[in-house]
Each structure stands twice: as C-alpha cells, then as structure tokens.
Image (cartoon, rainbow, N blue to C red; front, side):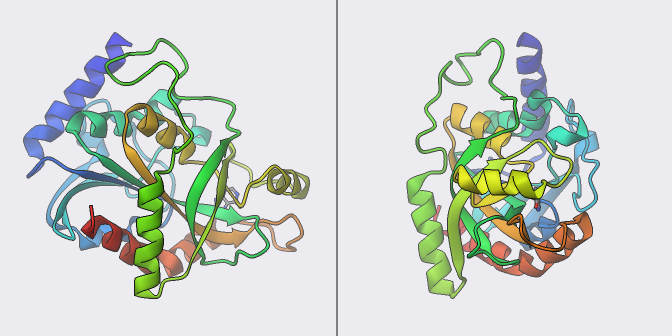
Length: 273
Ligand code: HPA
C-alpha cells in the first residue's frame, strides 16, 4: 500500500510540474474513441511511457498518451488509451490513472468505452448513458488493505454514475439532436467475445451492454469520491441471436463512426461543469 501511495504521489507530482493548469475533469477514452483529444486546446501531450510507474497501453485503437489542456474552456486531462484486465494488468495498474487524477484534484470523471449491445432496442452506433453496472470481472481494485486517505473501506455505490451528470448528458444530447439510450453496463474479463448462452444470461440478469473495461476505474473513482459519467458506444449487436460474431475490427470501425457524436456530447457536458 505504501508502495502504491509513493508511486501515485511520484507520478502526480511529475504531472503537476508539466500540466499547464490543475485539471477539473478527467476523461478516459475507450477503444477507437481517442479522437476527442484533437479538440483540446493549449495541449500538453505526455506519452504514458514518460510518466513514472505508468503501465503501457498495448491494444490497437489505444494511443497510450495523456493530453491535458482546455476543452470547452475547462481544464481537462484526457487519457487516450486505458489498461484492460485481459491484457494481464492488475486491478491496481488498471486504476492507477484514476488515483493519479485523484491526487491531481479532479472532481469529475467522464469515462467512455466500446460495448456490445445486448438490449434488442440497441443498434450499432448508439450511444448509451450508463445508469449502473454489474461487475462480473471476478476481481475488484479495492481488495487489499484500505488507505483511508484515499477513500472509505466500504464505499457506497448506489449512485456510481452520478445522477446530475446523467441528467446533464441527456439534456445536452437532446438539445444537440443526438439520440442516446440509457442502460446497465456489464463488465466481463474477456478477452473472448461472449458465447450466445452467456449473452442471453447477461441480458436476463439486467444488462443492456457488455464490455471488458470501465468498471474497475469507476469503482476506484467512487472510492475516491469523484463524480462519474459513463458513456458506452455500442459497436456491435451482442444479443445471442445475431448471426455475425463480434470482431475487433468491427468494433474499431463502429467506434470511429460514432466517435464524432460522442466527442460532441462530451464537449457539451464539459462546458457545463
Ligand atoms: N463484448 C464484450 N466487449 C465488447 C463487445 C462485445 O460484444 N463489443 C465491444 N466491446
């Protein structure tokens, strides 16, 4: 624990010296959704490999760099590239960026991902405001000794995805004519895409979308007391009846098509924070 704390503090103080101003909003960009960084002005770009103790992104579609600056006149720090459980990272490594942002003093976390749509009303390219999640990863970033300075031993997750932020996103989307769905995100470890029987099971237990990320970061962010907004980009049908299996190229192509709308929505939400 002491070791983790020391690493976090070292990484945060490294960044503090380089960022132009203290960020208020942290943004994590999911698979194929990194385009938002182009909208950030007064950019300071720092490759993950330069940040002390930062894990490195290995998946195609993830840039592996931090971009800080202004988005909609708000100081932000955006992470283009996240760490997945299926890559072999520990939960501590996956949530390290959240802990660094916590020390940098951010108040809001906007987290995006690519996900399979299990809800029959969802189609490829839909944006889903995450209402809640189900953690089926079989692990949790808070397991182990708790550091009370970082957060409580038994954090409350009844509003993991902040109600006001969800309402703000829904209102901004409606004003801009961007259609959004709402739903529950189920996190599985991956890396295989689900079997049809698994998809039917996940839908029956209340899932609307399925993916392999986000939940560890959101658990750590809630522990840190951050207000979280989560948005999934539905990159493929995952209803257990669909004849075409999901593949990574399809996910990347769909994320690229929906990216513009997602970026616009994130920028609109940030403008009100
Ligand atoms: N399953 C799990 N993760 C995903 C999917 C999916 O169908 N699409 C994008 N990420």
